[in-house]
Length: 67
Image 1 (tube, rainbow, N blue to C red):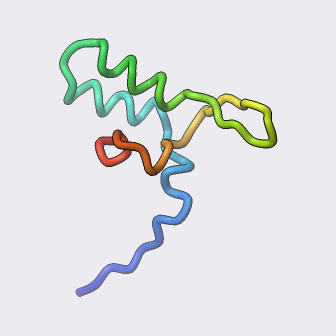
Image 2: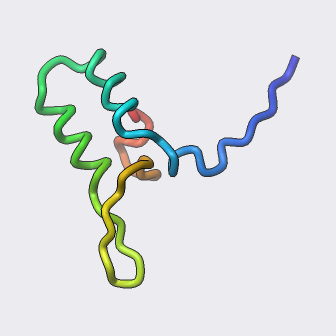
Image 3: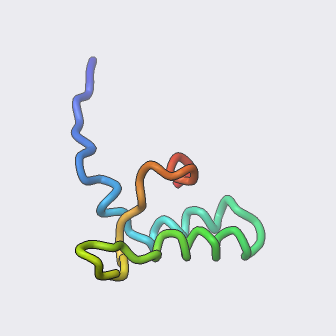
């Protein structure tokens, strides 16, 4: 049996609240989750303007596999 699925745009739609809830169950303390939330909410620069990120997880960064 084989499963074929397309993960295109998956990381662009990650819900921050759900992700942080799951991480809170696995990570003791508050400092690391705070840093992860700041990383997730860091703005995106497009055309010289920074816009806030409300959903999605950045790809290609060292923390990406953890998320």
